[in-house]
Amino acid sequence: MSDLKEFRLETRTWLEENCPPKMRTPVKSDKDACWGGRNWEFANDDQKLWLDRMAAKGWTSPSWPKEYGGAGLSRAEAKVLQQEMNAIGARSPLSSFGIWMLGPALLKFGTDEQRLRFLPEICRGEIRWCQGYSEPAAGSDLASLATKAEDKGDHFLVNGQKIWTSYADQADWIFCLVRTDNTGKKHHGISFVLFDMESKGVTTKPILLISGRSPFCETFFEDVQVPKENLVGDLDKGWSIAKYLLTHEREMIGDISGTKTLNQIITEKKYQLGPMLRARVAEYEVDEWAFSQTLSRMLSEAKAGASLGAKSSMLKYYGTELNKRKHELLMDITGHDGLEWEGDDSNDGEISRMWLRTKGNSIEGGTSEVQLNIISKHILQLPGA
Image (cartoon, rainbow, N blue to C red; front, side):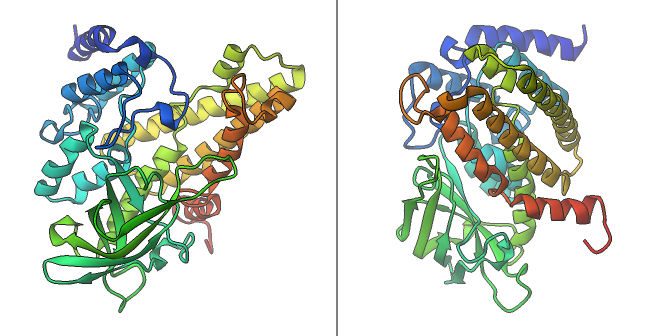
């Protein structure tokens, strides 16, 4: 028996014995997922047990080195783990910007002290992060950010504002882009810092979306003291880190593999489809399958050491457009029933609210227009792009 086959059998056995029943059901919403953090309240005992068991195995971030809270699994082993989790319908034990975005950046650019300080806590779900990138006056031109950090000797003094900060009102810490030098080109003089959201001078204000729900906040900084040891990478060289992290964010936004497929929803709800709708659903499912194969291939290449680079824009663009198509189809399938906004039958208007929420998919993480510009310039190398 090969080592990989043995690993698969051991993994299958462990998951069957250790994944609680309630963690073998699909996640209904962001609130139903486990986000962790110092103020997190577990939905039930099974949610906490599943996180504790998976974190103890290092399987919340299985490919990360063991010394940083991961399991040190190879690319092939991590793929087997995901396959076996999918086979029993096991939920991801932890939803985390720390795992999806900050962690890879710290592994590449952070000091060993920073990795040892933050990564094990991220893996155990003890610290919840938010991202301080977008600003009101910068729009899609992220490099025009104005939030500044003044050098005060042993610390920086941060002043400014961020917007669309997902879960800022629930996060413990923030990874934040700040301007530390105004004398050169706008891409220069940007630094990448980390600080506690309970620091004096940090305030948040929720932003309500058309769906009636929102994870977004305005975030304000007034004379926030940030210790110098919380600078990641070199001073004024944070743009490289920002771009690297964006590739992981766009990959995350474009990845729709963790959501229910359209066919699963139709089967569960027992929707009856006419021939025209069946044809549209079939066309969508072919495109969804093709995208999932492309996503799997690119992620395998990335885990093998290849850089996603501009390819992350392809994943982000097509993944979000697919998600919008999916929910447009659901609205057409459900007809006037899909317009219900409140009530138990519709799970408090889940279909209509999600349809409205997906409109933001093509804006967050860089607009679709920005992604198409990146693809045309860096992948297609079109003249004049």
